[in-house]
Length: 387
Image 1 (cartoon, helix red, strand yellow):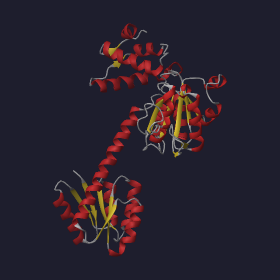
Image 2: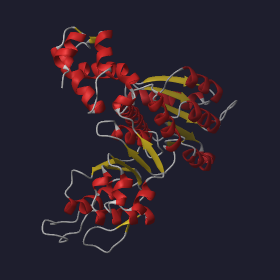
Image 3: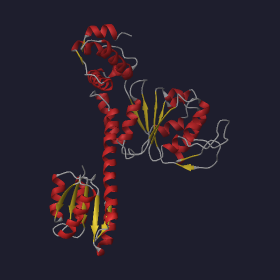
Image 4: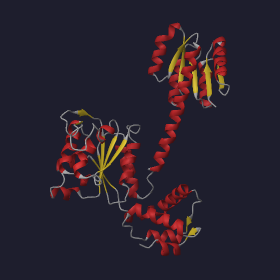
């Protein structure tokens, strides 16, 4: 049921608006306010899916109500009601964030269409927020160790900027998680996050994957195709395992970072792109540079901010939190009640040598939940967590 607030000082027009809305949908829950101050009080005290607000009113005009509401509850769409002489002001309210405006006397079809569109938009905003919350939870960084706290602090500082980030660390430590966090906390979070695993793509195809190609550029190029740089425009491009990228592709990436332009394979036409690049590697790039396998100039372009993700063995303090997190997550996936781990079981797991890092710990927790008792014991760990 949609909840709508009508703020209008002229009782006759207010009654007309309420009547039209009720006839359109009896499920609408409609409340009224006879001036701006009363309307603003209701907005503070309750949640609305839509506000219809007159512009010229005593005590507090519609522009002031809109501005105040946008500060406190920016997700509420406003439809402004304008008199003949208020059209310039109505247009101004659109710049201030109003969804739309209607003129007095209200045209029935235009009013109902605008109301439906505004309510649809509100539903989309709510759904998007839920999705973002779900995505944020999926890529949540678990841990209270000094090492993880330091990474979180760096992300808080660097995420709102467009600075490029190079993430280093062993396999399974959570480099992808850090990249997602940088994106989710950035001003680009509503734009695409595009991931490319450079180690999984053959060297002869990596340039086409990144920059796209034109028809006829090579044997299997039967049509034009955009690459990952174009797909990530306005968003973030995550180049995972960049240490495995071919030297020729590195040269093109360097140009893209220098000039914010790319060209598809087989074309000499430049395409402008606005992409934030976050890269990750499990290799020592300084050694790769010395061996001639990685460009030093590209390294310096990528490593504006360096984030090293520690091995799990370096942050054993976080293992109890990670066990609880994985146990809850696995139980949700399996639709079962989460199992608890005894203190002895947790202590034993903290002593393990986690060569596979977080990824290995998750697999072991899942195995123990499936094969262990109702409370996973030290005996279960000894039996089922052995490598």
